[in-house]
Structures are given as structure tokens and as C-alpha cells.
Amino acid sequence: MARSVRKALHSAAETVTHSLGYARHLLRGNRVTGDLSWVQPGTRPVVLVHGFLGTRGTMMPLTRRFQADGRVVFSYHHGTFQLGSLRSSAEELTQKIRELVDNLELDRVDVLGFSMGGLVALHAVKFLQGQRWIRRLVMLGTPLAGSWLTLAAIPTIGILSSSVWQVRPGCKFLEELRSAPLPAGVRLRQIHADADAFCRNPGPVEGVDPEHDYIVLPGGHASLVVAQHFYAAAREFLDETDEAEVEVTPPR
Image (cartoon, rainbow, N blue to C red; front, side, top):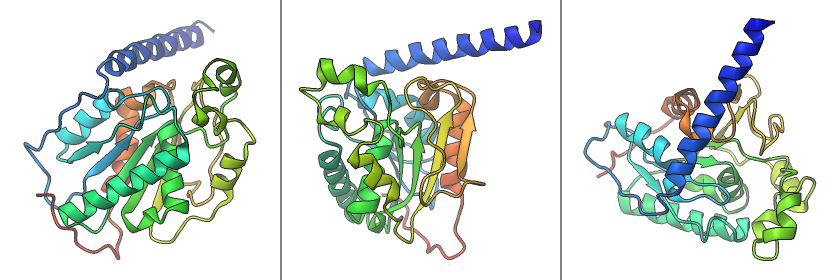
């Protein structure tokens, strides 16, 4: 009994620590600089997509870890705190990635979407031919079944934010996104936190291998971008090489 209590207290303390770390990076806003000092040969760039009420700064823990492992990292500012339409954000993301692939003379890049950012990236893949420029997509704590917390947000910021309405449980946007087939040539991995109070675990969605690419780890919502073990699960997936995969041109 005492051991389980200590474990619960330790887990709660970690969640609070991760939340504070997330808040600190949130305050960075979108003033984030890149680092091209070291690139692992043959690796693709990683595009990070932040979530609701987030900024590029919230992705800094992931950015630093990917850069330390030799990956070039890109992120984009999706309007004011991701309040706009998720469809519009997906269109913007698709265009940015297409330009990135053309400029770097690559075949495709990898994408990681945190929370609502995962919905944006998945919409790009399923409805905007994003698979032409995206090889793999990691969805961290993505509310694929919606979030009941949006019901509290609708009366407050719902008049300003169309994205809040698009994350209501059972809404048309999510139903279409979940049921649409996954295009050939792109792989998905879902990673969730077992104590996530914002995005309930939806179970594996269409196109996700439930045995290998559906992962639940200890932590809260902020832990997904702060804690090392979540990053390790994402990096492992992106580092895998498909047998039929063609050689990529290293970023310049």
C-alpha cells in the first residue's frame, strides 16, 4: 500500500515538473532559432507541429533532442496559438512542407504533431495528399476522439476559435478524420500518456499498427514533449528504415 502511494506521489510530482517546463518553453513564443551545426548523414529533417494555445517554443525540448541526434528540425507558427481552423492550418502545413522538400531536394520528410498539431498533420496526409511529402507521422497525445475540455472552452474562446469546435467529441471533423483511409506509402505512430487529463486515449486509429505503433507511456500531457521516454519512442520510429525505401539526399 505504502509503495503504491509513493509511486503515485512520484508520478504526480513528475507531471507537475513537466507542466512547469512546458509553461517555461511556451513563454518563448515563436522566437526560435535553428541549429545546423551537425547533421547525421542520410537523415531526413523533422517538422514539428505544435498544439492548441501553443507556440514554437513549446517544441524546444523535442527540437534540442532531435538536433543532438543529428536531425535538422523545422517548425512553423500556425496562427495565434493554433486558434484557427484545423483545415486551414493543414493547408498551410502542406504548402510549407512541399516547399521544404523542393528546396532541400529530398523525396519526403518526417513529421511529429503534438496534441492538436497531430490532427493538423493527419488531415494533411489523409485529405491534402500530404503523403507525397511526408514519410512518417508521429502523433503525440493527439485528441483523435476529441476532448471534453473543449466544452469548457467553447463558451469562453469558442467565438474566436474554430479549432475548439473541431475537437469536440463526436464532431464531424474528427469522425471524417478517423474513418478516412490512410494513403499508401506513409506510416503512423500514436503515442499517448496514461495520465493525460486533456486528451483521453482514443485507441488505435485507422492505419496505426496496434501492436507496434500504438504506445502508451507514463506521464501527463506536458510530459509528451518534455520527458525523455516519449522522445525515445518517437525517435525509434523515425529511425527505422523501410526495406524498399530509396536513399535520401542529406540536407544541405
